[in-house]
Image (cartoon, rainbow, N blue to C red; front, side, top):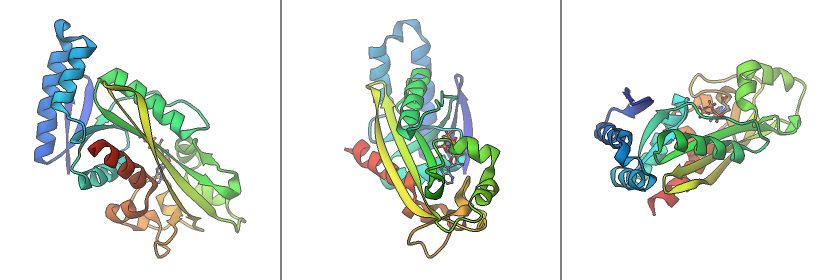
Amino acid sequence: MAFYKNVSNISVYLLNSPFGNLICLRLRIIMRYCSQDMMRTREVQERNVSAYFPKGKVVFFATGNFHKFDEARRVLAEFKIATAMLRVKTIEIQDDSIENIAKTSAIDALRKTGLPLIVEDAGLFIEALNGFPGPYSSYVYRTLGTRGILKLMDKESQREAYFLSVVAFSSPKRLRPICFQGKVEGTITHKERGKKGFGFDPIFEPLGANEKTFAEMEAEQKNEYSHRAQALRKFASWYSK
Ligand code: ITT
């Protein structure tokens, strides 16, 4: 369950939990401070942000994808980190490297919000297609979709593929993002299976999961295997220190 708040010009989705209310209250205070001219210096903003959203306790996830947020907040809760979804439009550059895409979006999101945040970029790399769609996964999903991929793979017997995820963190104290990677190997199925999850989940079967696709798993089970959960666990161990 989530609820929605509009604070300043940034939309935030929060979980219906005591954490949610707390984050929202603090966000309102921060926004008020930051909009007063005398408080606008970076030093003051930095101090306010780290006082209200201490490292290791709270992080904002800048994404437009609610499924990604839902997966992430479950993983981060394992580390007692509260997560809020920030719906802020960020630059998504075209690049062969998922890491560069994530870093650029994180810098842009930080510039627009001044909050400690993560951005995550992911892609599906199919070996028989020389890594396609990879960093172009978002565009390919919107244009060809899962059925288009199955068509491209129609006569293909080599069906190995992997998902790669990069989580980039930046904050007023860390203008240059720090990145964490996760990868899950698996195969592309012959037809779509399952209704859960999102994106290419119905056609991706991770290795060692009893031939279930991600779309046949609950979020908790997907998080045992997924590229995103692996990258987030690396981030969370670093962030909690
Ligand atoms: P952002 O707002 O966070 O950018 P997005 O949906 O655009 O969300 P990405 O750019 O990270 O997400 O991912 C590109 C595409 O790759 C995405 O649209 C999905 O189709 C696919 N994808 C990424 N992670 C996936 C996953 O865990 N399961 C299935 N498909 C995934």
